[in-house]
Image 1 (cartoon, helix red, strand yellow):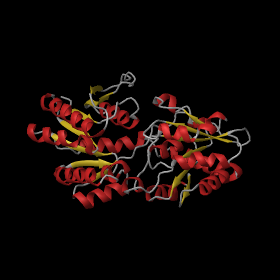
Image 2 (cartoon, rainbow, N blue to C red; image 1 turned 90 degrees about the vertical axis):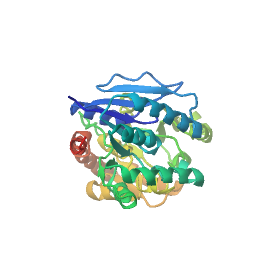
Image 3 (cartoon, one colour; image 1 turned 135 degrees about the vertical axis):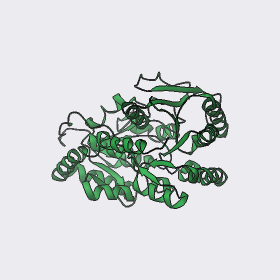
Image 4 (cartoon, rainbow, N blue to C red; image 1 turned 45 degrees about the vertical axis):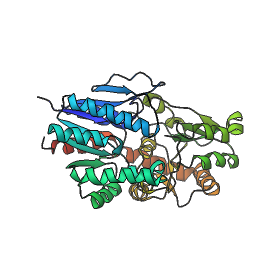
Length: 368
C-alpha cells in the first residue's frame, strides 16, 4: 500500500514551482501526496496535478494572527487526517507537524527551504526572531529526517542543530528545446528579474541603474511587499518603457519571458545569513533558459560559477557596479556567447530530472 505524505506550506500553491516539482516527483515514485497551503482573495484556481491539493481559507492574512490561525487550522487537520508522514516546509508550519507526528506516532520530515530565522523580515525583529529560534532549537534536533536547498545551509544546520541534512537543490526541469541564440544587435535589450519583490533583493538599485543604460529595459516578474514602492520609484521609467512590471505569472507563462531576455538578475543583498547562504532557484531558471546572469559574490554562487562559468558576480551592489556588469555583457559579444554556451552545457546537469533522484533516495531511506 502506498505511503501517504502531507506537505505543508503557507503560500497559496499556485506559484510554488518548487513544491509542485517535489510533490509531482513523490507521486511518480509511488507515494500518495497531499500539499496543503492557503486560499487568498486573489488566489487563482489551482491547476490539477498528480497529487492532491488543499487550501485553508484564513480570516487573517498577514502577521502574527495569520500564523496563529493557520497553524491552529493545520493542527486540527493533521490530528484527524490519514497519513504516514508529514513534511513541514520551513519553520512556519513545523510546530503542528511535529506535535501531530509525535501524538500519532508518524514520521516528521523537515524541508528547510531557507534559513528562516535569518530572513530580513524576521531578523530585523529581535523578539520575533527569538521566538522562531526557540522553536527551531527545540524541534529540529528531534527530527531525524531533514533536507535543504544547498550545501552551505546544510552544513550550518547540521552544526547548529545536530541533525543531518540532505541537499536537494531547487532546480527546474530541463528545457526540452534549447533556447535560440539571441543576437545582441536588436534593441532594446531585456534585463530580467523574476521572483518576489521583497526587501533585500536589490531591486531599488536595479531600477535606478536603468537611468544609466541606453538601449536596455528592465522586466520585473513577480509581486511582493515592495510592489507599490517600486512602482512609485519607477513611475517615469514605466512611462518611457524602461521598466515593465509583469506581476504574478503562472509557471507556464513565466517560462516564456526568459528566452526573450538578454541578462538575468539576482541581486540579493547581504541582509542576514539566509540571503548570504542562499541558492536561489532563479539562478537555475536563467541557466535553463540559456541566459547569462548577474549574482552577488556569495558562497553558493561562487561555487557554481567556479564549475560552470555562467554568472557575472558582484562583490558589491551599487548603481555603478551593476551598470558596468550589464554593459560588459551587452558590449562583449564574445564573452556573452561563451557564457551562453556554458549555460547550455550546465543545463544538461543542473535540472530536476537529475536532482529528483536525490529526492527519491532521501525518501527511500526513511524508516516509516
